[in-house]
Amino acid sequence: MNQIVPPRFLFRWSFTAKKLDHLPSTTGRLLDLPNDCALPSIGELDQHSDFALVKLAWNDRGLALSLTVSGKTRQPDCVASELLRSDGIRIWIDTRNTQTVHRATKFCHQFVLLPAGGGRKRTEPVVESLAVARAREETMLPAVELVQIQAESTTNGYWIDAWFPAEVFTGFDPATSPRLGFHYRVLDAELGDQTLAVGSEFPYDSDPSLWPTIELIA
Image 1 (cartoon, rainbow, N blue to C red):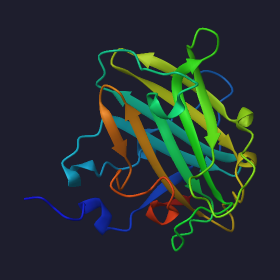
Image 2 (image 1 turned 120 degrees about the vertical axis):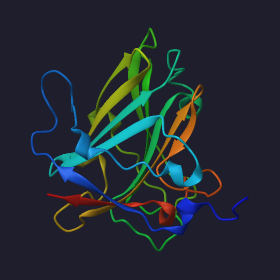
Image 3 (image 1 turned 60 degrees about the horizontal axis):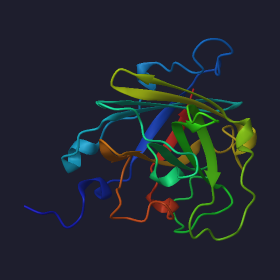
């Protein structure tokens, strides 16, 4: 039986991110987040199987994100000049978790991360910042050169580690605002789409009220 309203839209989702003071690492893998940092899979509610694992952590210096994609049979398709068509992840972050407005404020951010596609040989990972569609006000895009990113291909996919220092966000202040609005979309030409909560039937790319809440816990 077809459902008029997708099940994931029926809930106000809230997840947690742990505080890890040692991040980011200065040697070896940038993050290497433990399994208890993984965001839950809720795709089963819509009969979707997840192919990507997303982990979050934080400390007073910034926010850590790790993506692992598995189940691929070919290399990721990434071109730095075609961010929104390339394999990778888009994330949306609202440092004030404003759940009652439908257009982005100055506290809302959008980033695109690719496991490859950068550099002369198009083998280096890419991170870029984009304006949130239909934002209420124009804001300066953050300095993405401050973001640390590391990626590697595996036998059946790839992983990305990214460290976002507090300076790249407007309003990142865990002491007074310990809740973030957060949403992601993982795009893969071979495996399809995966989102944290609502999918493309809703305008999550421009409406912060559709983004789940991330509670920054100790």
